[in-house]
Length: 68
Figure 1: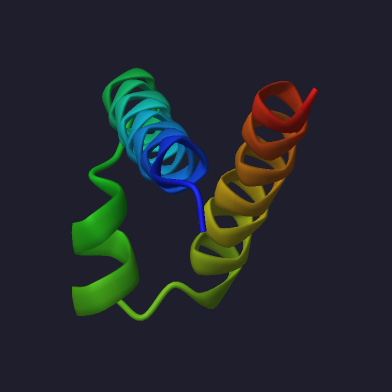
Figure 2: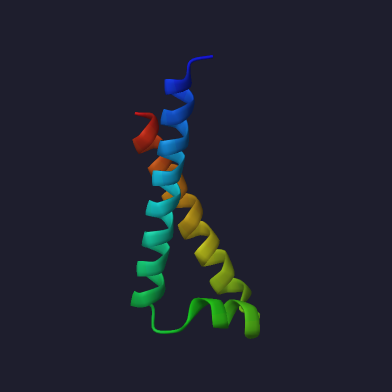
């Protein structure tokens, strides 16, 4: 096993997680309500589905950008 591939995979994974976190944080800031409060306290299922769809779509975009 070559270490450079393992290290590259770990670095790309961390970069993808950071980008996903930052974009979700931006989405949280531009929406009028607090997403976590709405999802956890008020049990807003529709908002949870929208947040999950956003994270999945961003994950697919990030992974395809990293994979090439």
